Image 1 (cartoon, rainbow, N blue to C red):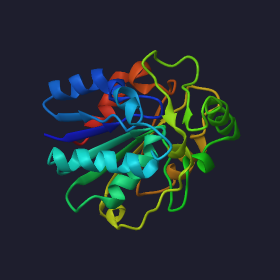
Image 2 (cartoon, helix red, strand yellow; image 1 turned 60 degrees about the vertical axis):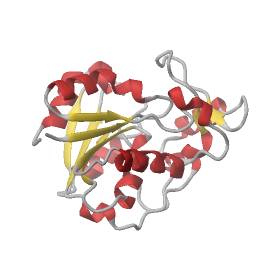
Image 3 (cartoon, rainbow, N blue to C red; image 1 turned 90 degrees about the horizontal axis):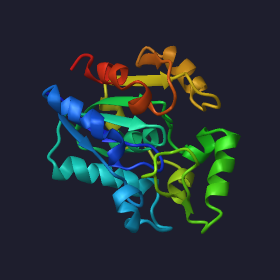
Amino acid sequence: MATFVLVPGGWHGGWYYSDLVDRLRGAGHRALAVTLSGVGERAHLGGSAVNLDTHIEDVLAVLESERVTDAVLVGHSYAGMVITGVADRADPGMVRRLVYSDAYVPQDGDSCWELTTEAFRQLFLEGARKDGISVQPPSGLDARATAQPLASFLQRITLGGGGLDRIATRDYVYLSGWTGTPFADVYEKLSADPGWRTHVLECGHNVVRDAPGEFEEILLRGE
Protein backbone atom coordinates (compact mmCIF):
# COMPACT_ATOMS: atom_id res chain seq x y z
CA MET A 1 0.00 0.00 0.00
CA ALA A 2 1.32 3.43 -0.98
CA THR A 3 0.43 6.73 0.66
CA PHE A 4 -0.30 9.48 -1.84
CA VAL A 5 -0.28 13.10 -0.64
CA LEU A 6 -1.83 15.25 -3.33
CA VAL A 7 -1.24 19.01 -3.49
CA PRO A 8 -3.32 21.08 -5.95
CA GLY A 9 -2.14 23.95 -8.06
CA GLY A 10 -2.99 27.62 -7.74
CA TRP A 11 -6.56 28.65 -6.90
CA HIS A 12 -7.64 25.06 -6.20
CA GLY A 13 -8.45 23.28 -2.95
CA GLY A 14 -8.16 19.63 -2.09
CA TRP A 15 -11.49 19.11 -3.84
CA TYR A 16 -9.53 19.12 -7.11
CA TYR A 17 -8.41 15.56 -6.36
CA SER A 18 -11.68 14.18 -4.96
CA ASP A 19 -12.31 11.63 -7.72
CA LEU A 20 -8.66 10.58 -7.84
CA VAL A 21 -8.61 10.10 -4.07
CA ASP A 22 -11.60 7.78 -4.35
CA ARG A 23 -9.95 5.74 -7.11
CA LEU A 24 -6.64 5.44 -5.29
CA ARG A 25 -8.39 4.32 -2.12
CA GLY A 26 -10.45 1.89 -4.16
CA ALA A 27 -7.18 0.40 -5.43
CA GLY A 28 -6.10 -0.23 -1.85
CA HIS A 29 -3.89 2.80 -1.27
CA ARG A 30 -3.99 5.65 1.21
CA ALA A 31 -4.67 9.06 -0.35
CA LEU A 32 -4.72 12.49 1.28
CA ALA A 33 -5.65 15.66 -0.61
CA VAL A 34 -4.28 18.87 0.92
CA THR A 35 -5.90 22.30 0.82
CA LEU A 36 -3.32 25.05 1.27
CA SER A 37 -3.80 28.09 3.52
CA GLY A 38 -5.76 30.92 1.96
CA VAL A 39 -7.38 28.76 -0.73
CA GLY A 40 -10.58 26.72 -1.03
CA GLU A 41 -12.24 25.94 2.28
CA ARG A 42 -9.22 27.57 3.94
CA ALA A 43 -9.70 30.88 2.12
CA HIS A 44 -10.47 32.54 5.46
CA LEU A 45 -6.84 31.86 6.46
CA GLY A 46 -5.48 34.09 3.69
CA GLY A 47 -3.77 37.46 3.95
CA SER A 48 -0.51 39.15 3.06
CA ALA A 49 1.52 36.88 5.37
CA VAL A 50 0.56 33.67 3.54
CA ASN A 51 3.41 32.71 1.24
CA LEU A 52 5.25 29.71 -0.21
CA ASP A 53 6.77 28.87 3.17
CA THR A 54 3.27 28.77 4.65
CA HIS A 55 2.18 26.26 2.03
CA ILE A 56 5.25 24.10 2.57
CA GLU A 57 4.50 24.08 6.30
CA ASP A 58 0.86 23.16 5.55
CA VAL A 59 1.94 19.95 3.86
CA LEU A 60 4.61 19.14 6.42
CA ALA A 61 1.94 19.49 9.12
CA VAL A 62 -0.25 16.95 7.30
CA LEU A 63 2.65 14.49 7.05
CA GLU A 64 3.35 14.87 10.76
CA SER A 65 -0.24 14.82 12.04
CA GLU A 66 -1.22 11.88 9.83
CA ARG A 67 2.01 10.05 10.71
CA VAL A 68 2.86 9.59 7.07
CA THR A 69 5.95 7.67 6.02
CA ASP A 70 7.23 6.77 2.54
CA ALA A 71 4.86 9.29 0.95
CA VAL A 72 4.38 9.75 -2.76
CA LEU A 73 4.09 13.54 -2.98
CA VAL A 74 2.10 14.72 -5.99
CA GLY A 75 2.17 18.39 -6.98
CA HIS A 76 0.27 20.01 -9.83
CA SER A 77 1.39 23.27 -11.46
CA TYR A 78 2.25 25.81 -8.70
CA ALA A 79 2.39 22.92 -6.21
CA GLY A 80 5.66 21.78 -7.76
CA MET A 81 7.15 24.63 -5.73
CA VAL A 82 5.47 23.28 -2.61
CA ILE A 83 6.39 19.61 -2.86
CA THR A 84 10.00 20.51 -3.63
CA GLY A 85 10.20 22.48 -0.40
CA VAL A 86 8.42 19.75 1.54
CA ALA A 87 10.78 17.04 0.32
CA ASP A 88 13.77 19.21 1.17
CA ARG A 89 12.61 19.87 4.75
CA ALA A 90 10.90 16.59 5.62
CA ASP A 91 12.36 14.21 8.17
CA PRO A 92 14.09 11.10 6.82
CA GLY A 93 11.59 8.41 5.86
CA MET A 94 8.64 10.75 5.32
CA VAL A 95 8.89 11.06 1.51
CA ARG A 96 10.20 8.53 -1.01
CA ARG A 97 8.82 9.69 -4.39
CA LEU A 98 7.92 12.98 -6.07
CA VAL A 99 5.45 13.32 -8.94
CA TYR A 100 5.16 16.66 -10.73
CA SER A 101 2.20 17.10 -13.09
CA ASP A 102 2.72 20.07 -15.43
CA ALA A 103 4.53 21.72 -12.52
CA TYR A 104 7.38 24.04 -11.70
CA VAL A 105 10.59 22.34 -10.53
CA PRO A 106 12.57 25.00 -8.68
CA GLN A 107 16.20 25.25 -7.71
CA ASP A 108 17.28 27.13 -4.60
CA GLY A 109 16.32 30.79 -4.94
CA ASP A 110 13.69 30.31 -7.67
CA SER A 111 10.15 31.64 -7.43
CA CYS A 112 7.04 30.74 -9.38
CA TRP A 113 7.06 34.33 -10.67
CA GLU A 114 10.54 33.91 -12.15
CA LEU A 115 9.98 30.41 -13.54
CA THR A 116 6.74 31.15 -15.36
CA THR A 117 6.09 33.05 -18.58
CA GLU A 118 5.43 36.73 -19.10
CA ALA A 119 1.80 35.91 -19.91
CA PHE A 120 1.32 34.30 -16.50
CA ARG A 121 3.13 37.15 -14.74
CA GLN A 122 0.64 39.53 -16.29
CA LEU A 123 -2.19 37.24 -15.22
CA PHE A 124 -0.91 37.37 -11.63
CA LEU A 125 -0.69 41.17 -11.72
CA GLU A 126 -4.15 41.63 -13.20
CA GLY A 127 -5.61 39.12 -10.78
CA ALA A 128 -4.14 41.03 -7.84
CA ARG A 129 -5.67 44.34 -8.95
CA LYS A 130 -8.53 44.04 -6.46
CA ASP A 131 -6.50 44.16 -3.22
CA GLY A 132 -2.83 43.68 -4.08
CA ILE A 133 -2.71 40.73 -1.69
CA SER A 134 -4.46 37.88 -3.47
CA VAL A 135 -4.77 36.83 -7.11
CA GLN A 136 -8.31 36.25 -8.29
CA PRO A 137 -8.82 33.01 -10.25
CA PRO A 138 -8.64 33.28 -14.04
CA SER A 139 -11.85 32.89 -16.00
CA GLY A 140 -12.80 29.39 -17.04
CA LEU A 141 -11.79 27.60 -13.84
CA ASP A 142 -14.12 25.51 -11.70
CA ALA A 143 -16.64 27.63 -9.78
CA ARG A 144 -15.03 26.43 -6.54
CA ALA A 145 -11.72 28.12 -7.38
CA THR A 146 -10.77 30.92 -4.99
CA ALA A 147 -8.17 33.66 -4.85
CA GLN A 148 -4.53 32.62 -4.33
CA PRO A 149 -2.22 34.53 -1.95
CA LEU A 150 0.03 36.65 -4.16
CA ALA A 151 3.08 36.10 -1.95
CA SER A 152 2.96 32.38 -2.69
CA PHE A 153 3.74 33.17 -6.33
CA LEU A 154 6.39 35.76 -5.49
CA GLN A 155 8.45 34.21 -2.69
CA ARG A 156 11.72 32.57 -3.65
CA ILE A 157 12.19 29.06 -2.33
CA THR A 158 14.96 28.29 0.14
CA LEU A 159 16.43 24.82 -0.28
CA GLY A 160 19.33 23.17 1.46
CA GLY A 161 17.73 20.96 4.07
CA GLY A 162 19.20 17.90 2.40
CA GLY A 163 15.95 16.00 2.02
CA LEU A 164 15.86 16.20 -1.77
CA ASP A 165 19.02 14.15 -1.98
CA ARG A 166 17.17 11.25 -0.32
CA ILE A 167 14.44 11.09 -3.01
CA ALA A 168 15.45 8.42 -5.51
CA THR A 169 12.27 8.36 -7.61
CA ARG A 170 11.05 11.47 -9.43
CA ASP A 171 8.41 11.60 -12.15
CA TYR A 172 7.50 14.50 -14.41
CA VAL A 173 4.17 14.37 -16.26
CA TYR A 174 4.06 16.86 -19.12
CA LEU A 175 0.60 17.80 -20.38
CA SER A 176 1.18 18.78 -23.99
CA GLY A 177 -2.29 19.59 -25.23
CA TRP A 178 -2.70 23.27 -24.40
CA THR A 179 -1.43 26.57 -25.76
CA GLY A 180 0.82 28.83 -23.74
CA THR A 181 2.27 26.18 -21.46
CA PRO A 182 5.28 27.28 -19.41
CA PHE A 183 6.34 23.66 -18.93
CA ALA A 184 7.67 22.56 -22.33
CA ASP A 185 11.23 23.59 -21.49
CA VAL A 186 11.01 21.88 -18.10
CA TYR A 187 10.00 18.63 -19.76
CA GLU A 188 12.78 18.86 -22.37
CA LYS A 189 15.39 19.47 -19.68
CA LEU A 190 14.24 16.64 -17.42
CA SER A 191 13.89 14.20 -20.33
CA ALA A 192 17.66 14.34 -20.67
CA ASP A 193 18.26 13.77 -16.96
CA PRO A 194 18.65 10.08 -15.98
CA GLY A 195 17.45 10.92 -12.49
CA TRP A 196 13.93 11.54 -13.77
CA ARG A 197 11.17 9.44 -15.32
CA THR A 198 9.26 11.61 -17.79
CA HIS A 199 5.81 11.05 -19.27
CA VAL A 200 3.68 12.89 -21.83
CA LEU A 201 -0.11 13.07 -21.83
CA GLU A 202 -1.71 14.83 -24.78
CA CYS A 203 -4.30 16.70 -22.77
CA GLY A 204 -5.02 20.10 -21.27
CA HIS A 205 -3.59 21.43 -18.04
CA ASN A 206 -6.47 20.03 -15.98
CA VAL A 207 -5.17 16.47 -15.90
CA VAL A 208 -7.70 15.02 -13.46
CA ARG A 209 -10.50 16.14 -15.78
CA ASP A 210 -8.88 15.49 -19.17
CA ALA A 211 -6.85 12.30 -18.57
CA PRO A 212 -7.78 10.86 -15.18
CA GLY A 213 -7.18 7.21 -16.06
CA GLU A 214 -3.81 7.79 -17.71
CA PHE A 215 -2.66 9.97 -14.80
CA GLU A 216 -3.74 7.37 -12.27
CA GLU A 217 -1.84 4.72 -14.19
CA ILE A 218 1.37 6.79 -13.94
CA LEU A 219 0.85 7.27 -10.21
CA LEU A 220 0.33 3.55 -9.64
CA ARG A 221 3.21 2.43 -11.83
CA GLY A 222 5.72 0.73 -9.58
CA GLU A 223 3.51 0.97 -6.46
